[in-house]
Length: 433
Image (cartoon, rainbow, N blue to C red; front, side, top):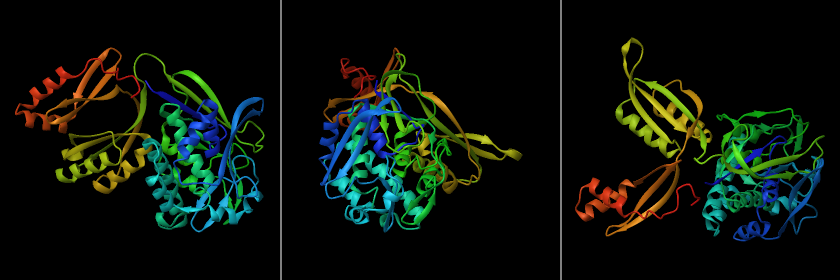
């Protein structure tokens, strides 16, 4: 059974506080450095200082540029401009300094994608980092009315924030985290100074990333910015659910410290643990439903394919009758909360519905592991499943079909032979792959 990470964002979330919290949980700094060394990025150093804040021990993570006159600042990407804040201690005035250094280290979204594609990163780290940068770039492109390829990351694309995002996801991998749950997000209020002038808190990119989601979010918890675009991107991409601390056997608790005085503890709390009990944990899903009486079977089939490609976990069609007893189809889509807005958009775009019902629910999920059985037609992948004392396995259909054709036997006989040959000493599906 893998580990669950719970992020308690009582003082917001930013990239440096996220990485600081994971280091405080035990993610090895040298392991993070080793992953970052795969990137063609030089001229910086990282430090993690463990100290007390408001009487609570935590870790303050910082990135320093060798050619900068002072600590480089975390901030937001903007097309052709830079503006910034620092969740860890600089004032708004501080962020109007050092523009030349920021320009020198800026990168376009296309630059960052190419760099991540080419670097020999751990695959899950590369995928996660790309997803976070994409989320932020989409928001910034929409806010500024430019194409996503034209978004220039003068600050989030700068060395320090590349380190925050890639290093943070590397830390998750090093801690063995396979699920992230996040508390409701707490942001501040007021305004901050930027290179575009004075802008409101929450900042436009954060508000844009909230659109179409069910992420619980509140403001007014401090007279400053607490949720940064980088922090919002990390939370939105990584968290599979938002809400209270799930039932865990807690292993460790860590704090990622900021240095700004907000009148109380300025930290991101992280709780690491494994689900309580012998069975796999539940997860949170969104169920979307609508009734359609004006779409052809081909149209619905195409919509189902698009929904699955966009992250839907399941799509089902059930015959139904609408008012005046018109024959119809009840469409049910199950998806993760972070995929809800894309699935709703597809339902509106690809079907005739004008309204979609939604509800959130928990589901029990069987633990799973993947095995393979060698055959004369090549390997047949087998999914091994477990829930409590229940065990079962199922072969991948395309592999099984290829084996049955090569062996000249019925598909059911091929499945029986694979099940018989499956090594019963394979690891329990509840063990982490």
